[in-house]
Length: 178
Length: 156
Image 1 (tube, each protein chain N blue to C red):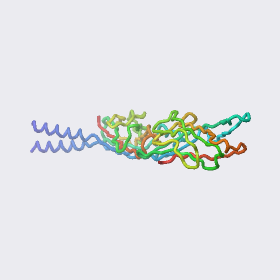
Image 2: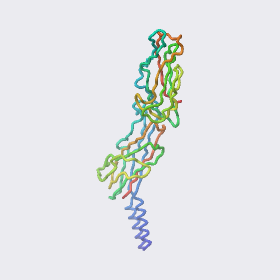
Image 3: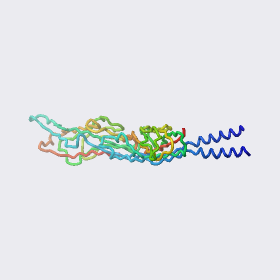
Image 4: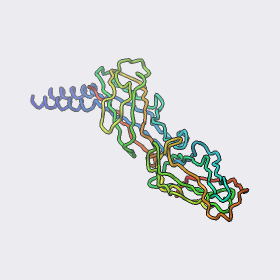
């Protein structure tokens, strides 16, 4: 009789275990590389000029609107890194002066590894890195986010200056893999 | 001999009445996160992505049992990142008109541990489920993130 009870209990236990069932599906999210760069407030012309009030005075550099902001979004594979480079793509800097570009420290609401600025550079037609080591990151959108760029003129040789000379330059900024 | 026949009778009847619940789960969710989802340089991806309201369907067949059935959910990660938060919710009662079903109507996070999702009684066909994922960001390494979502039905 005892044996019988054990057997019945055994079947009941087996029966209880048989009362669950599982099934599954997969959820997959495919992320891709992103490299987006933008200038804020816009990519309008920056105007820099030299002026003198009196004969014999040192020429003054007039910077009316010489600032822009770089915003970017970057997504990379593994530990890959990107940089932002700058070069003069068209036109020539008037003789006797340098065109300088200063890159600020990172600012704003962004997140991630947003890179390291190069400081102040003299622009020419060769690409130069202004921000290196950008990885997965975004700066935030608009003025006050990312890196502030400040363009300036520097006179290196007065005798080469020609005050009737003006030039329009095209400056290209590129976000690329290292 | 009598005992043997009795045991055989018990075994057969037990088998008949103890048939497990039948659960059918269909509908993976595969999502391409495109750079075009970023509205402008400087921004991140949208805060969340939602699947179709019937991305996954559950059909629960308790085989004539009227016992309460609990549905549990968990995930088994294949390639995952701790910043990702995957949620699920039930968007209706299913297609066969059985309204004997409750809970699961708001998003709940799917973790790596079985968690109660909803409860029902009787046969339900194509109970539709919707997912939401948050935490997708350009900050994450570029790759495919994948997890298995497992549903388990148990008689209470």
